[in-house]
Length: 284
Length: 255
Image (cartoon, rainbow over all chains, first blue to last red):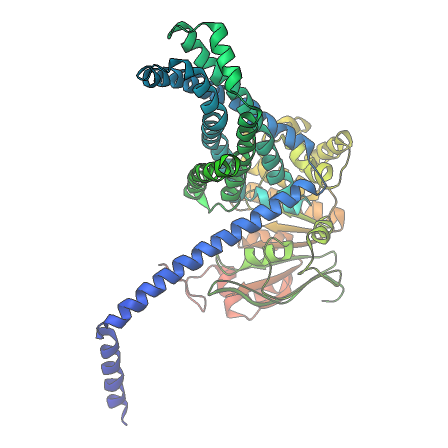
């Protein structure tokens, strides 16, 4: 075959490949490929997250420990979140008293307002709303701080200075989140009930003694305990999601921004999912 | 080169289908300074991260004092890290800490040294790199780029490491400050009697700090020799690179 005819064959072949129309079977293969890639991506992400959580928990219990870092995180996550959680609980309790009074008055059951407020606050509203507020405040802050450390090589610098980043950065935040959110929620419980009490006494005409005795008669230890256990789980979720997304942040301002958004969104969704699961476990 | 402090033998690293290191072989003699040159994206930083254990090589062996360090567990890696010091490209100072705390960090957190003793060492190192002792009480954000590099150098040498790594030590500095940093690097490395491995594409830096030079291209070392032989390497890739010519065997895709 001459060089010219060889070129002509190659050209013809190339043209036939480039213009070959997709067959219906090709479209089906494309769908399978897309589904497969999504499934593999999902399981890959779950695997990476599970491995990260496993390492984080292990480093919470293995020395060396960094108590100064833990103390700083306890202040950051717990103390500085108190105003946000307190305000949320106060106004939630107040609104709850108003709304439940409106509803119960239609059935002449106004006396149930105090009980509804205390049960709603302790079982659901204080842990969930505190969890979501802390996810916004603390989860975002953790992801942004660790993400910035990642992109400016500060995390690599830790490793080169013989300090394990999981022990120094991750473990103190996870421990502080898990310990401090129950304490915040406990304070939130008291403030939320107090908010309902204020509205009940000054707006709805309840007598202080009867409101408090109804509150106390309705409340059981398990109502408070379940809320505090939920808060511990939510605190762990918020800190872990913030650390995970920050630690795996991509380069640049956009990477850190995306890590921050993902930390808040994933923590908020997981809080709502685990709230349902834990409610089933405690009260089904 | 005999009596190697650091050896890389057939080190390979790929990210997905992209092969970055395709069998890097390199030796750094004890007490000498080797500089790896090469264009952007040729695998210099990945090679350095593999040596530091920040990335795991897919294949090959990395030896320090004839001990294979490429597959150490976490504890052994932390112990090995005590032999290393590192100056990062952007200094990588911890911005929540004062300058002296940055310099003393490895001593206090990594080795459990008393803070007062570590502070004294940190101030000594800060003055050794040409900064005033009072600089120790400032935060990194209050320093210029050149001062941050000096603090990064002080941190790298604070624990008297046996091997010091330099990642683009003069990037982002004016020529005068770059020369100051280069001279400080030589002074500190020679003073400690340490072995040094640097990566850079700044030729002025190479000529100041290198005893030996290696060139990396497309993931492999294509030339190694004493710095005195750099201008007579006879290697067209090296010649194109050191003279900064656009024409030659090294081609760049713009897009």
